[in-house]
Each structure stands twice: as structure tokens, then as C-alpha cells.
Length: 86
Image (tube, rainbow, N blue to C red):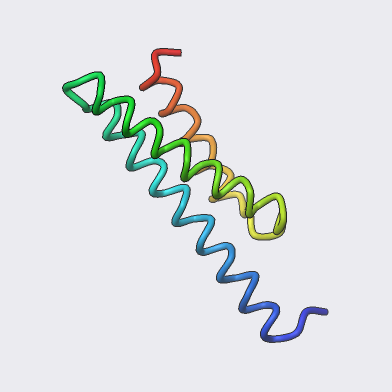
């Protein structure tokens, strides 16, 4: 059983991962809407950074990756691929 402080830490880690994934979705969306190649690439780079950050932490805290966060993870990847023309 987890202690109260450890449970709060894991919940906070889950919130952080969710926020990073949501930010990645935002950047990928901006990349899709960008009018310039430079803007698209900049937004894709930022989307990738947030995705990589979330991925790093969910590997260390797999219990923090709920089904909703997995769905957000898939959405970030899908949007980044679409914006990159893959």
C-alpha cells in the first residue's frame, strides 16, 4: 500500500504527464494550422519535446498513464505525423 505522500506524488506525476500531452496536442494543432514551414517546424519540434517529456516520466511511473492519457498520447502522435506529412 502506498503512503499518502507517495499517492499524492503519483497523482501529481499523472497530472504533469496529462498536461505535457495536452500541450503536445496544442503544439501539433498549431503546426497543422501554421501558414509557414518555419512555424510548422517550430511547433512540431515543441510538440515532440512535450511528448518526449511525458514519455520519459510515464516510463518511470507507468501507473500514472491512465486510459485517458493513453488516448491523449495517441492523439499527439497522430497529429504530429499528420503535420509532418507522414
